Image (tube, rainbow, N blue to C red; front, side, top):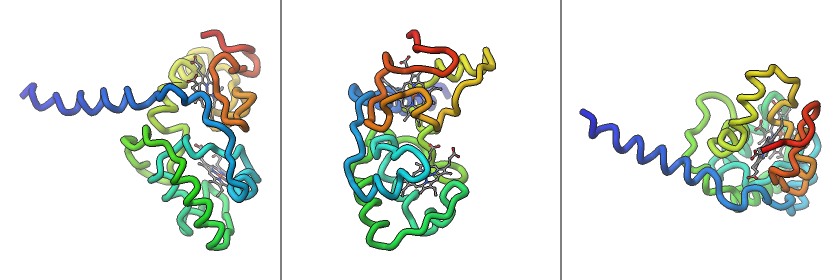
Length: 165
Ligand code: HEC
Ligand code: HEC
């Protein structure tokens, strides 16, 4: 029944074209002071546009904060809701077709857009067995990640130097 395949292809095409909006290399710095203060303690203050509103909503529930990727985050309701609102209001719409994670909390590194942008790197990692920073460590390769700048001509990979496209 070949015609039953068509809707799947249509969905795939939609997912791929929506994965790379033109300005995804310049997301801007996180401007909300509460988010900067609370979410920059342990890692980069991830830009809200790196995940969908659904993902942020899930990450910011009290249950999720109590088991935040192995950490316990304690946050009063006022700040929890303020951060949650800010993240959801500025989330990406291009990740909306990503399936929810099968287990655990959503990860930026598992979104369609991220995988698409880092596909070549993942191949390099596999083939050369290079000691490359973990993909969640954005600052390891994108020197201006704090400012939300991910332009490909600024990528520097420790041990490999400038990324040649
Ligand atoms: C007490 C330390 C700590 C604080 C504070 C913290 N995080 Fe995290 N966060 C972690 C750890 C640890 C990980 C998992 C790192 C890993 O497994 O690579 C993580 C992972 C994440 C990830 C997944 C990154 C990926 O791999 O794609 C997101 C998104 C995230 N944190 C968002 C937030 C937000 C939003 C806040 C503020 C509400 C916050 N974090 C505050 C410790 C923290
Ligand atoms: C090990 C190095 C490395 C790490 C770690 C890394 N990236 Fe990248 N990133 C790259 C490379 C290489 C490219 C692709 C450059 C190209 O287009 O050839 C890229 C591309 C991108 C792009 C697309 C840029 C454009 O011009 O469209 C975005 C956005 C991005 N990365 C975000 C992130 C975020 C967010 C993180 C952390 C969660 C991250 N990266 C972690 C190496 C890395």
